[in-house]
Image 1 (tube, rainbow, N blue to C red):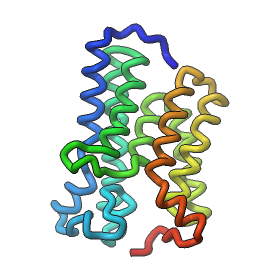
Image 2 (image 1 turned 180 degrees about the vertical axis):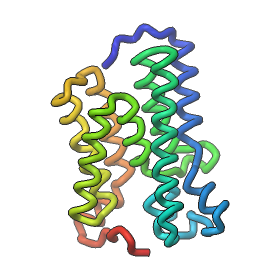
Image 3 (image 1 turned 90 degrees about the horizontal axis):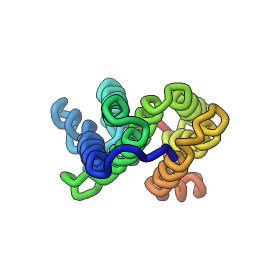
Image 4 (image 1 turned 60 degrees about the vertical axis):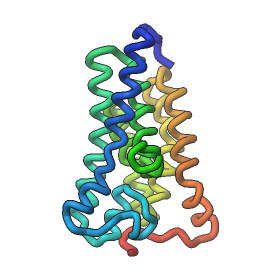
Length: 201
C-alpha cells in the first residue's frame, strides 16, 4: 500500500468525492434520456453497459461504458493531482463502491467493471491497459461479458506485481474480491453453463 501522508480529514473528503462521482448512474440516465426504457425492467435489471446493450442500442451501451470508466478515472486523477498516491487509491476504491452501492438507488448499483478499468488506467496506464486487454481478449474468445470482468480482475494483481506497482497490491486484491462478489450470480451461471452471451436480449 502507498505511504499515508495526506491528513485524515482530506482523505475523508477524497473518499466522499470518489463515492459521489462513482455513484452517478450513467446507464440509467442515458437509457431514460434516450427513451430506451427503465433498465431496472430490462434484462438483468443492472445499470451497467452490458444491460444497456440489451436494449439494442449499441451507441448507448458504448457511451455508458465510457462514462462509467471516466468517472472512476476522474476521481483518481483529481485526488492524485492535488493530494497524491494515497488519496488517489482511496478515491479509486470509493468510486468503485459508489458505482456498486449508490445511495440514490437504494445501494443497488452496477457491478463495477467499466469503473474498475477506468480507475486502473488512471492509477497506472500500463496496468490499466493490461487489464483492458485481459477483458477484451476474454470477451472476444468467450462472448461472455462476465467472463471478461472476472478475468480482468483475477489477472489485475498479477499485472500489478509484474509491471512493478507493488504499492497497489492491497487495492488490487480488495477490488478483485469485490468484483468477484458482485458477480456471484454470474459465477453460478457460468458453472451451470447458462450465462448468456453478449448480444442476447
